[in-house]
Image (cartoon, rainbow, N blue to C red; front, side, top):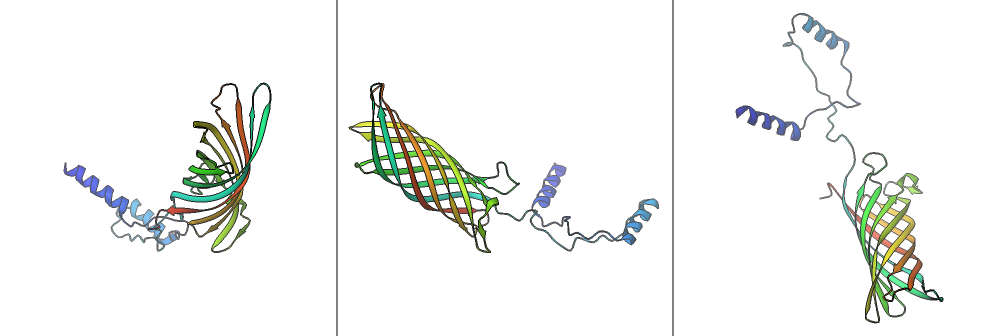
Length: 242
């Protein structure tokens, strides 16, 4: 029992204690000390008179980075939609103007880039879109965004500007003539992000979206396609911020 408690105590100290570690800046051992070590072991292993020096450069973190906890964002935008309703006998197209607000919740990851770079983002969105015929629809999506900081357009000590690309898939819902209709949604975004410090991202995106509505009458296809622009702000909460 005492051995187990001693082992647990030593393990805890090794995890949380401020220990010295080797680094690339650690000075090599002098030839005199190296010879003294070899001589002591050749004379029976007496190391009582040896004096070992710690690395004068104490490193508290192996990697100088902050890990992302989560990202929240809000954007507003406008788009032009073209809806085509068709069956076997023909089709009809209608054009709408739309305004929308979108909330997002995300987490940054390192998926295929350099370790700890966290350039990829998986996110969820909820948006409300208002179209000019006094109709509105809501959309839920899950998306993947690539923060292309490796192609930074401009960079200073306090901010940087880089391109982004993202793709989303989800479902939309609309009510027409007392019928609740849902549809499969896809969206592609391409834009620029102005990142100030490590926490704030201001962005402007061009996007193309498509909604395949499930029409309440069988045999009728209902598809809506749109192109628009959105501006918004993301806040990144990082480990160590508080």
